[in-house]
Image (cartoon, rainbow, N blue to C red):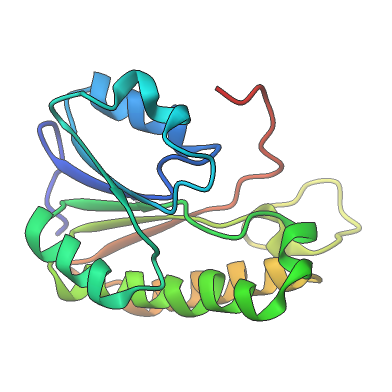
Length: 187
């Protein structure tokens, strides 16, 4: 049985200063969670500037490809959950540099997942993508349909789901969220 998580639980958010993270992190703080963000800060600190000094936010600039850093943060922060948002996001961006995409979206992803489990993290939420389905003829696309990723981005998202599913056991709950295109005004 998976243990329940409620505030003041600790949550590590990779990519927490990105497009989704800068909306999610303030909501986690509002709900009483202690939050550590690991992010390259490609867009600077501005997306989280309103919350930079929040007493329950620990913002760390770093790369998920740095396995020693990931292990050190997991060991010191001891999160109850990891929300993995960090990635080379979307199909066009992933096609610019295939090796970078592989190193971030596949190799580092697996490293973060395995490290989270090894450090006793109870829950892992993975931001996958509806692009893992490919193009379907049916009107209703459900999670029961086969995965037929077309792009490199989608393939690595599907492979990430496979890795996460292989790690799930009584002490480690993994969930993949297959969001469709996420759009809106950047905060």
